[in-house]
Image (cartoon, rainbow, N blue to C red):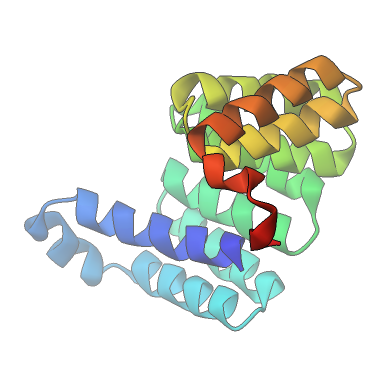
Length: 171
């Protein structure tokens, strides 16, 4: 569910980041229809179809944010090799937001490459050191990498950011 929301959010940010004039130009572009169909497939829990639509859009318009969409859909479809390839390609092309780095780490972890996952999540946390999702992700990946000291440190940082986590009445 989180992954689906991220894909939809990424699409909205991509559209909003352009000028109204460029959006009007893209609205006529065939690739945008493929992206919309891909987002629809994701919201209907059909990641395989989403991959196909996003890949078709990517063939029509070489845009690194489309690589991110293919990567996230692939991760949702439990295809970590494809997810890693697309997310890493987007990162190489300059898309290096904390969220993309985090999802690349998750894809690498799903592939079993714990060392690469730890490196990527560290990059993500360096960009957004107060992001609770990244702190939890960093802790979990550090634990998988048998780096318990880092895991404890990140969870302690999380409790400082969200002190209500200590309140057992919440659970």
